[in-house]
Length: 269
Ligand SMILES: Nc1ncnc2c1ncn2[C@@H]1O[C@H](COP(=O)(O)OP(=O)(O)O)[C@@H](O)[C@H]1O
Ligand SMILES: Cc1ncsc1CCOP(=O)(O)O
Ligand SMILES: [Mg+2]
Image 1 (cartoon, helix red, strand yellow):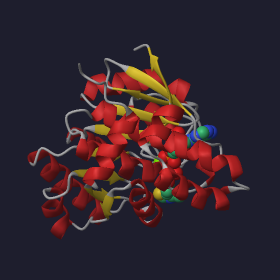
Image 2 (cartoon, rainbow, N blue to C red; image 1 turned 180 degrees about the vertical axis):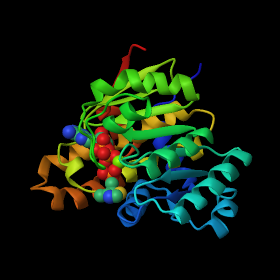
Image 3 (cartoon, protein in one colour; image 1 turned 90 degrees about the vertical axis):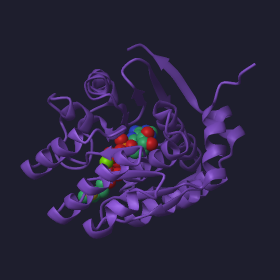
């Protein structure tokens, strides 16, 4: 008899492995993302300089790349790391923060997409625009609901052979052949900066432990955020207390609680 792997078993496996994850993320996110990773049980390292980023990608279990505060130097580090991760057979996750905003970002994301990310995690506006659609996004915050991004996510997944996670009030994850929606979280989450960036890093942690199952890895990471976010939101007075409650909720989340409270439903593709 085989037992289907649940988000809870994926969480336990991730904690047991405490994977080293190379996170190339933005200046806003670096601290909160590292704390989110530690609370969840992963080992983050924010390593982005070209001189060492490629070498580091070969020893980390996974790489995450986020263009939030992009510069030519950051981009050089992203290029060598994504290539090194692919050569070492490690999964890598792309977070195309506000890629529609400027030509520099658009060109950078086109180049990074050509390096074949294993998983793409973005908010609804980012996913719509990445598929060539008209999004309402202007800066880093989404102006669209995820429902509008679902078709774009499926199209992107098929076109690029990647898992695509579009997040918002109800998340949507697809690999082009299957899809799920994940409910939970809190309306306070978009009020705390860099939680989406932190989620991208956590997706990398799960992918490091499940390199052959990136769809399940992305679902498990998003489910952790959904359950911890819902728990933290219950007693939070606002974004400030939500922030620390969320970290605490992530750190005490266990396999049983995750499987009991995660609301994941299969969606048609
Ligand atoms: N209105 C909401 N209700 C519940 N959870 C939300 C809401 N908006 C965002 N989230 C959650 O916040 C996290 C970050 O997603 P999102 O805000 O879409 O990313 P980003 O910060 O990149 O814009 C995800 O776990 C998502 O499910
Ligand atoms: C405010 C800001 N500016 C550049 S990156 C960034 C953080 C964006 O974080 P998130 O995409 O998780 O909202
Ligand atoms: Mg974002």
